[in-house]
Length: 81
Image (cartoon, rainbow, N blue to C red; front, side):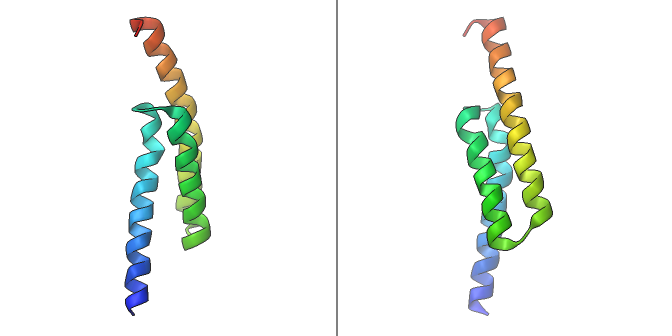
């Protein structure tokens, strides 16, 4: 019973980190956080057998990485940072 609660706590923490990391490419480095979110999605899939959520996290990681790069390019072009 104690192992079950530890596993559940780990699952919640990993899922929370995965969802947050999936949207971090817009705020910080897309090259760093995109693959990190994708990797966390793979961990969710392998470790906790959550196929649907892990697929969504991995797709969001790829899409948001590309979107983050486009957004960064747009900011640099328009504001000359």
